[in-house]
Amino acid sequence: MGYGVVRPTLGGLTSKVIMVGLTFFLASEALELVENVGAVNDVSGKARLFLVLPVAFLDAFFILWIFTSLNATLSKLQVKRMTVKLDIYRKFTNALAVAVVLSVFWICYELYFKANDVYNERWQNAWIIPAFWQVLSFSLLCIICILWAPSQNSMRYAYSEELGEEFEKDETNMTQIKPYLSTPDEDETRALKGSDGEFDNDMEEDKTE
Image (cartoon, rainbow, N blue to C red; front, side, top):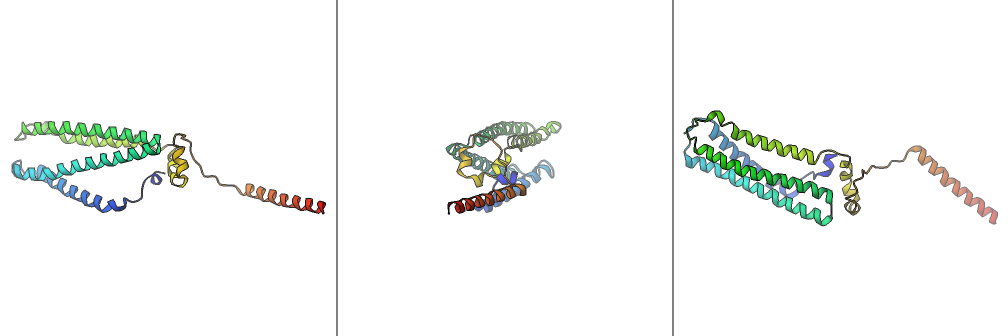
């Protein structure tokens, strides 16, 4: 039921997301090629800075965009009093904030490490720097999987659009909603009851006459 609780499209943001994502991909790939292909001093410091700045600015833009959107989502959920979703998104926001703080500290350590190892003499310990980013990304993925894990309430959220305001008012009552389908026997019983009722009414009218 995961598809039922997400939007199928991004609407007017689709073109912007594709454009910014493609720009970030090209900038990051260019930086990775310069850092990992060729000798150490093939590229000057100014050229390397020219490649680092776009990636840094785009990273900052993504972080600002994410937290702005999360803030709007939290405000919307708070107004609608959807306490369960509000708690989930607050935990997710806190996890992202911790990840950002750790990233800033690690960037500072990375700059210190590279400043003291100009000629790559400590190459045996250099693997720690990229490994941290992989561990951080995997940790965020695990947090997302835990917060939005499938549960008995997944179907309830899938039917939220059909329920409308009643679903939002009953947000705190986490009961699973199941569609009710009548069986052929029940339909036949109802039909018989209806026909018996009409027959009884006809008999009463005849007695009255």
